Figure (tube, rainbow, N blue to C red):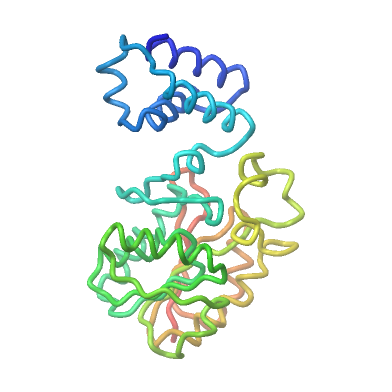
Length: 274
């Protein structure tokens, strides 16, 4: 079997299973099996597929057909132009979260100290550390997530200090210019409405924010107030229907602003500590 034939066969299997982007997924999985990039596949499409490549490719296709996200199969996900390693211990970084990065770069470029609450893969903390001249800290309650984030920071050359704790409980008060977070915000009651790949494979701790999805915000916002210096900023990602509720929690803060994503859905909320 040639590489071209293997791609066509994989694409057909993924299409029949209604997997999104079947051609791209087949290319990514075969490239991962061969340990090459996708451009190599096109340049060698007539080459015979080695047996070991076929064995790995078949296993990856089987995993994807059974709902395992492509990113957990390959162990990689791009975020803000950089490749991050991901495992089932961390949430897969989403393109929508890049809006949080853009808001931070626009509104808090002069921040000297930053803390990322619930860092997961470290995508936000590492990106801000590389984009800004700031001292960056990051926390997570999951030891396994912290290990993944530390590995990403090390590979990408980002100076981030990681702290294992609940929210910012192990971090001193009043020392930060910027607090950022992409907290869990999926309501537990809406579990069946999210994709099978998400609910079956991504960590529940990073997904669900209590019965109404707002449980972490109720704790996070007062915690951010404790951590921030006077005049410091809070930038958080929000769920698609949570804007009004989160805005109400920010009563007493200044300059509260909501920014939409490319689909027009409220995605990022900004506020300033008085």
